[in-house]
Image (cartoon, rainbow, N blue to C red):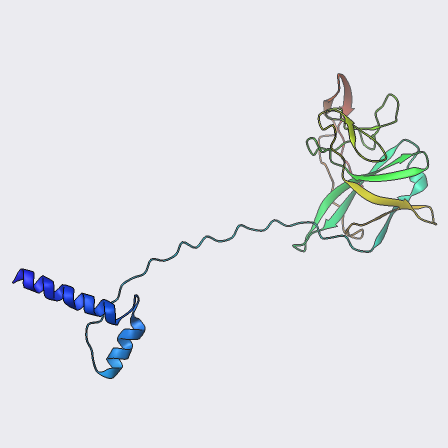
Length: 221
């Protein structure tokens, strides 16, 4: 009797499989409406493993057409530089600190992000000191001594040789102001300090075989 029962159950199950598709609620309901109650069979389908997409990191907004007057040209002496902590617009609607510097060489002005391509650290070994201190002809990172061509931002010596600083379009307008363009910033926003440190502590910075003793300070606008 057991074998016959098993055979009958298998036959009923096979008939149900042929009559109703996998997950056959629709077929079972149709048979029910016809009055043929038959055998209601439900077979669970595997749930697909849904992997959420990775979060998309925020990015700086593309450049707009605005021209930003940052400072008067006389504020930066020949073979000197000046840092400017700005607030940059991002595509998530936020403003984030963005530190840049403008370097003067003769009558020309050049603007770059204040970040060494070697380690991302600030270039100035002391506030607004961006040039190699002996000859004042090239820009220099105060941390590991990488040297950069002023006009192109290309590293000509140091651990990131061949790489370059991120340049920003810079020019002097008819009013004698140093202007930036090709960026997206908010000059009216409150500017956050770029770096907050203990002004009473000192730090020895390495520079290609010689060392500079630099007093730490807060770099405010």
